[in-house]
Length: 298
Ligand code: UTP
Image 1 (cartoon, rainbow, N blue to C red):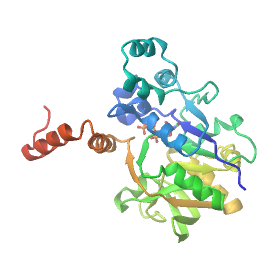
Image 2: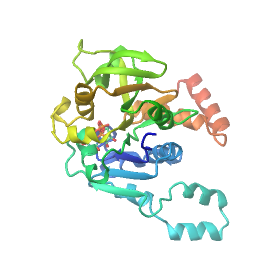
Image 3: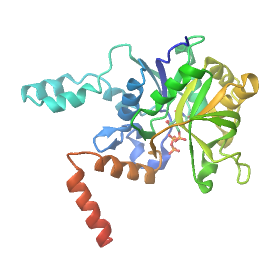
Image 4: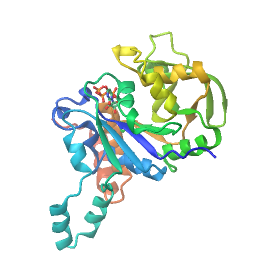
């Protein structure tokens, strides 16, 4: 029986420059799709996959994120007095038990790999852990991380979520060099972060869900500088392929929205808005009218 995956690292220390000026004072992860911040989607998915401990790697200016998971006694008392049960229920999702959540600081944004390494002291030997990037919102019947943890229970090793991307976009992702594929699992013989044009090993891109072994933290400790002058998680996983050859890609079922980009965030807002019963009719009619009239806000 393999160790259960019960811890997740959520690196949220990036500067979020693609959303400036909004992200000057609002953490990207607090920006909302309809009425749920990105971070809530990540936490809901993780909980459904059996994650019990959440480790956030944060930085200066992320206070709103910490407040979001705190108790809000004045708000709750007021809602209770007014008997607003649905709103109280919505707040329940934001509740974290004491000790369920930890915050670690990344002093400088030295890259995703460095952010994950910052959490090393909270991880135990031999204990696999998940990494979730809240920018990637994945809508799926079975949550993406749960699909991966189920597969991990069978096969072990290190696993990254992967999906095919158009060739024109491949260079902005980490890409897999695939040895072979059985069902949803790919055996991986190499990985490269944001390769130069013509150097792409495939167009199977790494998406922000990972199940990793503590060896990856050791590899990150070597602080290899990679693409963009940053310490890349992809490089530490690629190194593990050379050492122990136990890295798999998992082709998940579901639809991924890149909420780290403006276009992706807008697409997700429309898709999640239309998925809501309370909004579907009004919002759908508005979109149809808008498209028909070609009208845009001034
Ligand atoms: P991104 O590459 O999307 O960077 O990081 P970013 O800073 O969030 O956004 P842009 O590109 O400036 O608009 C992917 C994930 O890695 C985290 C980010 O918070 C995000 O969840 N990250 C990145 C860190 O935690 N630390 C870093 O040094 C870099």
